[in-house]
Image 1 (spheres, one colour):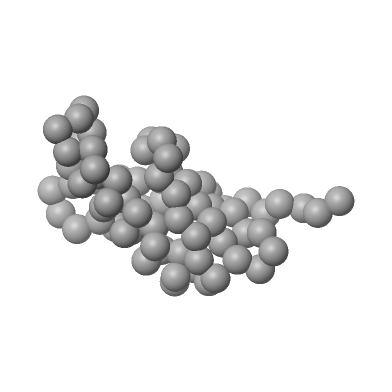
Image 2: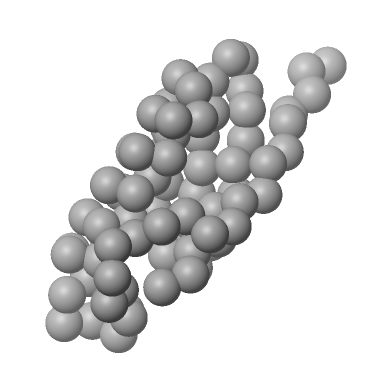
Length: 74
């Protein structure tokens, strides 16, 4: 399963959302923590969506794509 996450850095920490999975998001103080949280969030989202029209991964989840943007302060 290929997953794309939009990742942002704000005020010294990171947060991400998965556009293909509405309401699926994660946060972390560094990228390692963010990716662990994101992997867990996607797995929980898919468990909660069991029986709904959401495809299930055939192998362990792996982040394959990320879009990183920064938010500039005024």
